[in-house]
Length: 213
Picture 1 (cartoon, rainbow, N blue to C red):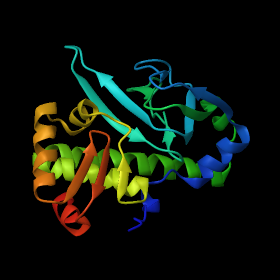
Picture 2: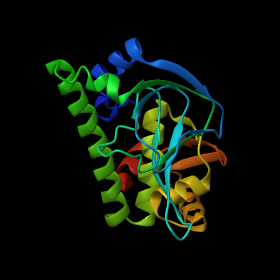
Picture 3: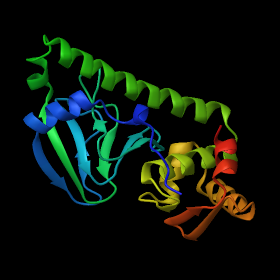
């Protein structure tokens, strides 16, 4: 079964089109930092290929994964002057980069203003959904929601996970042991089937949707 990826979760086309015209294309190897936490937020990034993870380190050394970004997503669209999260390539990536000042020079154009607002709105929606999942869902519901989103992004039932279990745990606010238990539980219910830690198949999509909802 092919799964439709909702356009509401994609980046604003106006911004992507603009960055395609203005942006400098840069390549990053797997594990390479794209920008750092608390650095000056002077660039906006559009992901062309690969997967990117954003993270924030707390003062006690704990790590929170902010989100995972896929081709077509905008990364680093900050309201403030610094990046609140760092961004690292989970796989070999190609990114288009534009200076914020370059976009600012065109901010008087109504279509650009609308595109910037739309990109910001969609990023806020992603953040709100993440907060709802962290605050109100059970451990099993969190893992089901995560696997459903990745499957939707992938577009098919046969899914490759670019992130490891620790990334999943730090994104979902769980321990890695809890994530592993929930994956085992979902497999036991025959909702998903993992060939290995980075490959899974959705076997009962309606049941996965019910848990995620």
